[in-house]
Structures are given as structure tokens and as C-alpha cells.
Image (tube, rainbow, N blue to C red; front, side, top):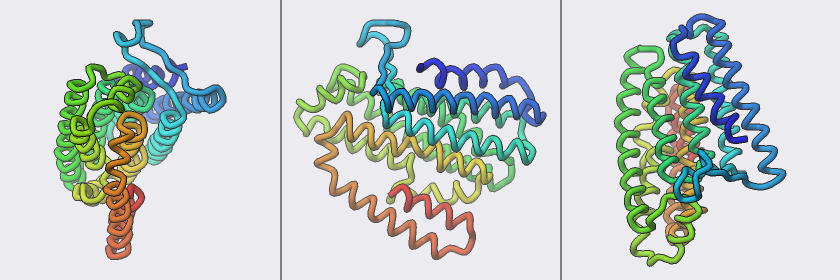
Amino acid sequence: MFALPLGIAWIAAALLTPLNGRRPWVGWLGVAALGATFIAALVLTVRVLTDGPIEMVAGNWPVGAGITLRADALGVLFAVVSLGVLLVALTYEVLGGVHEGTLHALILFLAAGVNGAFLTGDVFNFYVFFEVSMTAAFVLSSYGRGQRQIRATVIFTVVNLLGSTIFLGGVAALYRVTGTLEMRAVGAIVDVLEPRSTIVIAVTFLVAFSLKLGLFPFHFWLPPVYRDTWPSVAAILAGALANIGSYGLIRFGGDLMVRELQLGAPVLLALGALSIIYGAHQAVSVRSAREALAYSTIGQAG
């Protein structure tokens, strides 16, 4: 079951990358591949919601030696929503005429990355899949090649590289105190450790995911990027890529570091409330629809 939603996008991206996406038939091949990935994710979602979580270790390695893949209700629902947004965005561009020949491949690689992030049970593998998505998004954010798009790309890349560095530091610290990166094992070990040894790691993850998500007060990069990128790309960044940030906050807080989440609940409630208020206030204050949607995204993150 894991092979279809994870494999279709990877294989299609590799096969279609050499082809010129400006040709309509190539674009429609990309749409078909992404549609097949979406359907496979839907089938996996139905099975998970019916029979419960599914887990396997890649390559049939022993648990602890191989990379754990895990599909549960949270992961598959995030995967379906994100793939749906990507499918609509790619279909829209193909219908209107693709401007750059690599668009279809970039969206397929991004789909493979977000799928992997939502369906992994390993912390470092989550980071790897996240960076696959981010690398595709860095290039995708320049789609259009106008001055506005290039400016948005620079801001988006610098800020998200900073967030990735902070997150990787948290992963290294987590491995240092737990000795494992398998998510369920990490959650069990963290639960018995002294809070003073894990609270700083939890704060590191909070900052990293808040930067990725654009949560107040880490939102400073989001309005200019969402305003200046190509409309369909802005939809992808807000409706698919940002989901990894919100998923990370829920997964790492609700599964891996539950006690730390309880300790930091007042802070999260305050940040969420401030994001809602700030985003709504700015959205009704600006004059352009692009800026209103950008600031509205901050409120939705809250």
C-alpha cells in the first residue's frame, strides 16, 4: 500500500523530467501521474480509517535498523489534502498554458516529498523528505521569472534554509538524548527523561515549524512571498507545503513530546490567538487581493 502513493510520484517525476512540460501532452501526463498518486493516497486513507494504522520497515530490515514507514489517520489526511492542492494547481497551469518546461516535474517531486514526510515513522527520514519538498519549492517559487518572482524566491529560500538548519539541530539533539530516531521509540523515551533535557529541543522544533508555517511572530517572510509568487505557486506554498509545518507541530507535539506540549500549551495558545488577530487585522487593512490573501494565511495558520 505504501508503494503506490510514494512510488508513483517518484517514478513519474524521474521519467518526465527530461520532457518539455510546455507541450500539452507532457503536462497532461504529469496531471495523470499526480491524479494516480492522489487516488492511491485516497485508497490508503480509506484502509487506514477502516483498519487502523499500517506500518512497515523499508527493505524488510529489522525494526531499528531500517527506515520505518507508517500511515495513520493524521498522516494520510494531510497527504490527501496536499496532493489535492497540487493536482488542482498543476491542472490549472496545464489548462492555461505552462510557461516553463520543468513545472510538471517540480510539482511531482514536491508531491513525492510531502507524501514521504507524512508517511514516515522516522524523524531523520521526515527531515530528508521535507528537504526534497523544499528543494523543489525553491525552484518552483521562481516560476514566471519576473523580478517579483525572483525576489520572492530569494526571501523564501533564505528563511526556509534557516528553518531547516534549526530543525536539523533539533534532530541531532533529539538523537543525542534518546539514541534513536524511530518516532514511536522517541516518544516513549522522551516521556521518561527529565524535562530540562528535552524542553530546549521542543522549543527548537517549535521555532523551526513556526518559521515554515508562517506563524506569528515568525511570519515576516510570508506576505511578500505569497504576494509576489505566481498565483498557482502561491496556492501550492500555502495549501500543500505549509501543511508540513502544521503537521510537524501536531506530530512532534502530540506524539513525540507530549509533556513538553502540555508545558508549552499557554505559549502555543497565545501565538495562535495573536496570529489570528494580526492576520485578520492586516488582511482588512491592505488594498490588494494578493496581500489580503497572504495575511489571511497567517490567520489561518493561527
